[in-house]
Amino acid sequence: MIVGVGCGSRDNAERAYGPAVAADAGLHPVRIHAPASLTGLRGSVRDPNGQPTEVPCATCHAGRTFPLPSSPAELGGPHAGMRFRHGTNVCASCHDPASAERLRLADGRVIPVSDAMALCSQCHGPQARDYAHGAHGGMSGHWDLRRGGRVRNHCVDCHDPHDPAFPSFVPMPPPLDAPRRAPAGRGQTGAH
Amino acid sequence: MLGATLGAAAFARAMAPLAELTESTSVAEFMQKHYRELSRDEMHKVLRRLEGETERRYGREVTIRDVRPTPGVQFAYALNLSVCIGCRQCAEACHQENNHDRATHNSYIRVLEMENGSNDMERGRTDYDHAVPAPGKFYMPVQCQQCENPPCTKVCPVEATWQEPDGIVVVDYNWCIGCRYCEAACPYHARRFNWERPVVPADEINPDQAYLSNRIRPQGVVEKCTFCLHRTREGRLPACLEACPTGARVFGNVLDPDSDIRWVLENKRVFVLKEELGTQPRFFYFFDV
Image (cartoon, rainbow over all chains, first blue to last red; front, side):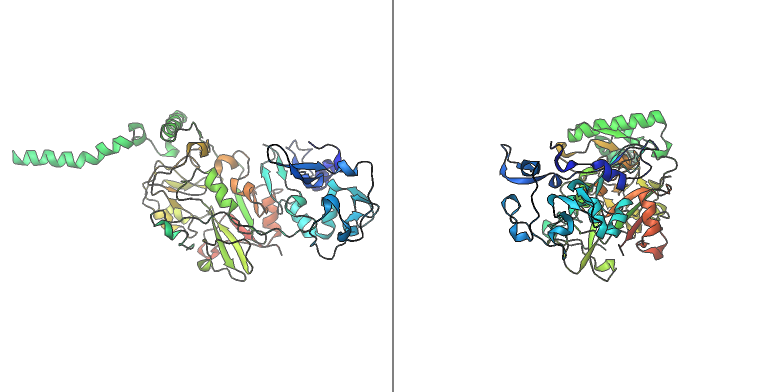
């Protein structure tokens, strides 16, 4: 459990994106998932169970301010080797030039990394609008908030902010529509 | 005398199927009434009997419930074709949630790979096996559309399938005679027939089951998507929605004006499959434009 890193204020995110009625009508909350990538880095060292270790941002950034690099090429140490494919953005488009570990909105306000959704929404308005209405981004839990809560994905759960295109991957296996056919006929029936 | 002997032999032969039937069918199962005619007590007995049969046949203790519709709830589902990437996670989640036969890898969802710019389902492919999304393609998952005007229920000769008050079309697997008329009547290819008794390893069985949805089906009956009614009638999201990594799926109560599904239907350009057939699906598709 990583506490206090990135000055997490998930409550703000909930106020901004959750249904406004949630608290008043006695409904269960809609919570936005807090992705680990906002509070730490995946280390190269594995723990005894073979799981990659999470290194909290605070390990280096607590009490210290790093100036923002002028180009990705200057990035070293744990941030070396990152891919950058996010339009024509430069580091300072999103990060606060005075402190790399904070974000800066277009109007100059500096916000913690945990409030990244407010920053994303500045440019991705249609997606933010759809998100606010449950029509963008995965979720789990209850459709009926009178009976239980819901957890929504954060932008960063699915989109790497530095390389945001959703990655391509291998799908689950195709259906075997006709069980009586020889196994060689796997998937031979197109949908009608 | 000869006539009497022949008569007795013919009678014995004629009754043979009944003798075979009792090997696999208990008297209680044979005498069971239609779902909608079962009293509370009878339902209770049926559920306990089915739980016992599942445990005997599959070696897993399960709970089979009779989950009823909630008044004031009408379900609808919408799917965003702009973000669906064809990963088949929904179909896989369905396979596991609904205790489908493992060998046939059955699922209530088929994902069609379609050419950009075309909506010709005849040319959609379900057997693609490459990294997704492929360039020039879009992906359209198809499952039961829970039609308001369902052709499948009308053709059933024994009324083993019907539409519930919350819009879900269900099958009483113990009343179905396996004639497959409904499968032929469905324009969306949404129904499946159990050619064999489903095989599911005990440790993979989802023990949270309902009579009308994901209990393990008998051989020789038709089954279909139930919008995961054992989940959704208790307020939970369907398994296919939770599995979707892109958030392409939106589900909810269409009678609630503040629901996500209502927002989609009111603000997105939605369409339904094969609208010209007049089936009035509760399953909608839309693009982000």
